[in-house]
Image (cartoon, rainbow, N blue to C red; front, side, top):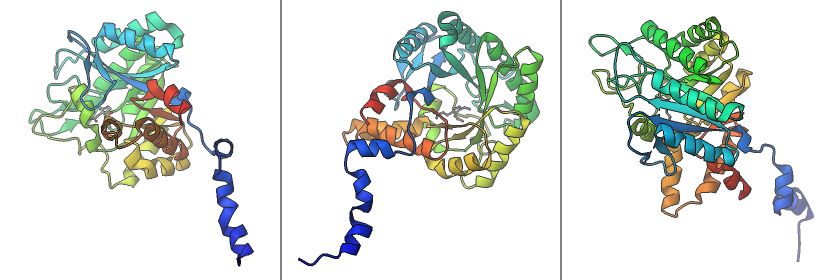
Length: 333
Ligand code: PBG
């Protein structure tokens, strides 16, 4: 039989030789996902009778203060030792907003687990206000007032830092909040507290399940977050926002959501040499879970595939609702 040695050698086996078995595939990977680079989000809600599973996010709960401690204990046993906390107060108010419920949870976690646990906390107003916006609204409720919002956010960040958070993470998208928060932290004796900015946060439909969990959907004359979050078609805005936040003193920058904005993550992580986080948000996570629940997809490996894409695109850390399963899922990948 006539063979074409050239064709065979040049195009045939050359690439497939390195794909042929598990061993060589493991040896040739350019990036690896480690459970140590994942951060587990938690919702803790004031006034719940018992914990409730979040619709669309199997295995994720709206925790009570007690169930939060139990869940974190269990997670730590499996070495999931980094978390991001979302506090949801029982009473919503638009003036004299109180951050003490969230601060108490941070204090309780620190008291119980000490330095074994790395605690980040989301800093925003959307779960705290009656209107569900990330800042303070004007009287007509059709505009978020920037500087009044920044003032509240800086107050929240300092309170959380003093309660023992390792890292404060503002997700509100107001202008100037990074500088204001850094100044408040330094002035309040929290020079070592890290500042992770949700710097490239897009106005996304993928936050759906989260807004149920955090009770934070916008409900006012101002109907959505388009006037403060980044438009999905504006990569330039994501760059400007991230560079500005780096200049204002953010230690860590973030792209959010993850999968629909991989191009942004790759581009910005190359242009701005800072540690980059990516948030695999509730809608992305839940979409995979929904397909997996119908047995239409291998869920664990689909999650690992997405995490691999994030690392390949330049993320050094990933916020994901699946962090607590990562050891198991990565062992099977
Ligand atoms: C609030 C906030 C949101 C998320 C984190 N912090 C949603 C929003 O902007 O409405 C989304 C997280 C997720 O969907 O998992 N500022």
